[in-house]
Image (tube, rainbow, N blue to C red):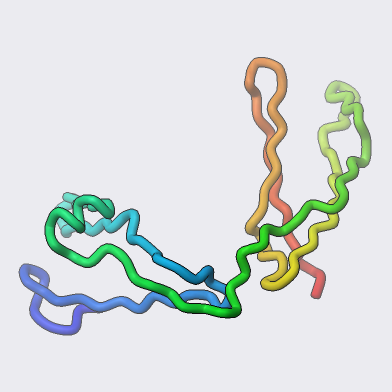
Length: 131
């Protein structure tokens, strides 16, 4: 949101919200990008910001940080053999995922199959429909 000035010389403000389970420590901006109405863009990384004398990190304090990764406890498939010419094109996968603090994030996970010649099939893990 522009808080002063105009399109040619303006000051803007945005709000970022950290999750309540965010890891404690130094968080560094790794990428900033912005563009103009003509389609020109500027992209800066943490080194660019530091070289320009601009801030590129903050310190987060959080005794409630969740730094444990979720675990895949079980995995099964509806079949281990798909016969494509016979119309068998779908594989149903069943998963059990556990997490000790924040919980599974809906739509945050995916799995990938790679076949002969590098062909790929992917799917998303979703908790939609379950509470």
